[in-house]
Length: 117
Image (cartoon, rainbow, N blue to C red; front, side, top):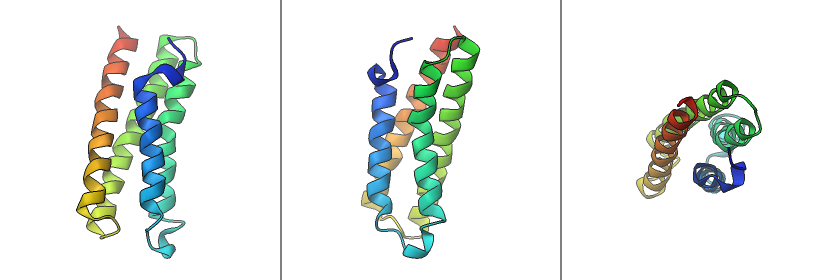
């Protein structure tokens, strides 16, 4: 497995984290320890687990961390929907983040398939 920094899925998930941090800056202050923190933590979990998976030796260990990354991406997907429905994100802010999460999810599914084969 190549170093995590060379994986396109890691790069895209890292950019997603940066975008989510920026987007959550405008969330209400009373969400600082609620949805803001949850969304940030779940998003950071994606590239973190990809990086950790790349440092492991067995395919099963790698697959487990890539699965965790995928689970976190699905969590972010829901939390973005919630933020939109609570009107913390407008549609123009929500759409590119949602598309980025979808892309990362597709790429993680492909990476998992590759590791399992």
